[in-house]
Length: 44
Image (cartoon, rainbow, N blue to C red; front, side, top):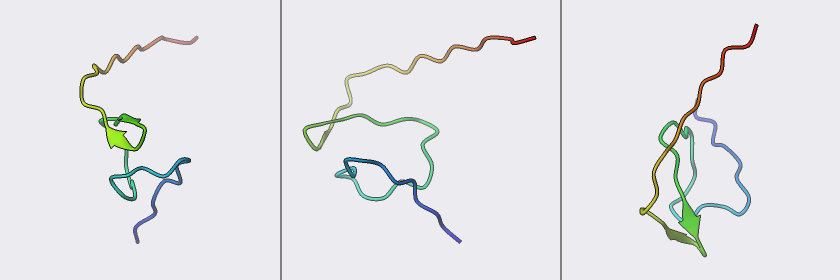
């Protein structure tokens, strides 16, 4: 069973069922000139 993420506003590229790589849209157009930065912090 597929369960799409509910995003607001809805992405122009269609439904999203996973967002592991991330995506960026500007005014309904996919924006590709961005870099992903992940930060991990250990919590004790």
